[in-house]
Amino acid sequence: MANEACDSCDENGNILYQDPQVTPLGCYVFDNSSVIDTFNGLATLNSPKRPGLVFNDPYTYQIRMNVGHCLKRCIDFKFDYGALVGGVNCRCGYANALQSYIKDDDKKCNMYCTTATFTGNVTYPCGGKDAYTVYKAAVHYYTPPYNITLEEKLDIIHNMLGDKCTSSESMTIDECFDNCREGSDYCSASPGDNSQLCGGAWTLSLYEISAIPPNTSPTPSPIPPSLLNFTLTLKIVLGVCIPVFLIAVLIIVIIVYNRRCKTETGKTDEKYREELYE
Image (cartoon, rainbow, N blue to C red):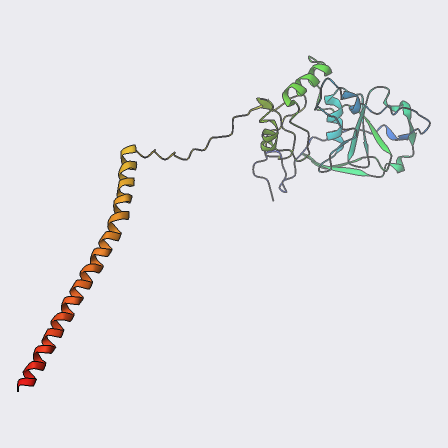
């Protein structure tokens, strides 16, 4: 069903992307004789001085991984190369990324990613089993800003996210708010709901976190002491008077009954005497 809140979606609700218009450098596999994996750029972004800011390597985006998404990830953090492996895993590397890799037959990179773009669907190689389709980390429609260093960006992200907000494929603004409500005044959200503004390349969508709204139900007014005393007195009076009243009614009933019985007995005796004299 179409997403009416999304201005950049097709009739099926799929987000439309720019066509990266890139050509792969080839299909590469890890050189088992190498001691170090040189295509580990994302892992190098992790630092003890920024706890809570974690970069997974590889970066996996099961829902919508595509070449453009992977390359933007690598460009955002100033890497030289981007590579896709297994169709859903993205890795980034610096200029020396290919030192521990060897070029192999393109047939080993037999997985493809299809992307819905503004000009139609496009398909690019996205690696294979343990095989990397490598691209230069550059796209024609995007150039990252150069007035900020990578360290400055990482520090800003860490200061904004603190130790509460995390990256998630299904993250929404509300979920991010819940994570950050106790930790900071602002936070950014990762993609998850395509109708929400959740940042962009080198940019953060900032939202001010308000306190949890208090209970707005009207508080009942306290009962005045005079009314409380009256209520208590009324209870005592009723508690005493009702039994007394019932007892009085019972006594009256008994007296009336006895008098009625005596009257009936007197009438019977008089009638008996009259019959006797006759």
